[in-house]
Length: 303
Image (cartoon, rainbow, N blue to C red):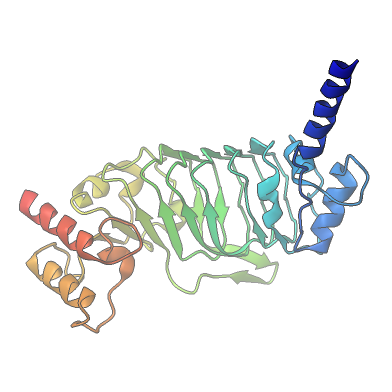
């Protein structure tokens, strides 16, 4: 009897000591209301991290929903492996934080949504479906982080002036990028400047011949040092109006000791003229320092 009582006491203590899933604090009341209405399984009027993690699909809960602006709390929905087709279609959300478990974004997932400013697609996402971010009229720049592999048909359109592609890119479909988007029947949202596409792979990815159809003869392509000739000679990469190699700090169309000298002077504070970071940042880490100088020197010595 004593042994049974001791065992029961241990079990009860174990249950009491077990950490409870914390309730999520939502920044947007409209988002919270939808989440609670659909996934609050214990009926307490809150959504816990455990309840969020148990969700395997968003269905049409957020499709064409307005009156909301942010959904950073989506990051707690770790049971999701994909953002389904039309999941946020025509929603008013301006910002959404994807959970690390998501590896695919479905067709029309964010099409005609209010996503604004810079869009960063994390590298945990491998595939972005057709029309996924089509007609996003407040989206101004796109960064596909290292790990993203495929981009669908008509995937991105909005007044975008900056588009960054990772070395992991394996394929980009036809007409994937369009910076010119009709806003209304009587006008259009136009980018403030021409589109600049930055690539991180020294070997051109096999993109569709018309991947950049909408920007032919207008956009600028920034490529890694030493890869200029390869991009100019490769299918869908061969139609840009201007090509720039990373490391060409003075913009004279060639990499030489002058670029090294200017970069050193800038880093040391002796050169005060503006240097375009994405061209001078040879290693792509977002910081201009001695490593960029070293890599540029290695390229010059090896060329």
